[in-house]
Image (tube, each protein chain N blue to C red):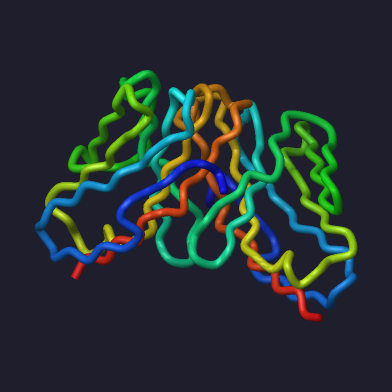
Length: 114
Length: 112
């Protein structure tokens, strides 16, 4: 158990819809990172939030957006869903954004887009 | 070519065998992480390395910064070690700066 939780566990949406995924970080962790993991692939970095501000972004279009709240929770929002968005979405929290800060991963949300 | 390459992609071993998983990367890094992912998705951080070697129980991780290469070793492997092992690097510059880039993972199966 890492102390990081995600909801929902599974989600099915149709193309064009919008989705919000939620993550609850460990208490005291001011940094959260979001990753997309397609089947059979390693995770890919979507973006990171540090003290409620975006602190880096991977190669994902603007329809992927996020929020981080003062209570250690965060959201990943995806608009205009596409079939290729079907994946496991992982969040990871850490004490800070440094490369030496251990990231604690949540169990993931499996999103299926039909 | 991916920035982080792992080998082998699949590895099958008998219980008790010594296992090595390799990771090569092509970008400058500030740290390298080894992660373990069990079926169902949960990821656990095993090691964070910026130089040298670390040991935790039956697991040993090494890194050679000059050669841009890291290895994860498992001594006396056990069926409960069966999982996907992922190497991830924290970029130190360029387009990789400040983000974790992951390898594809190595699927390890240890038979009793």
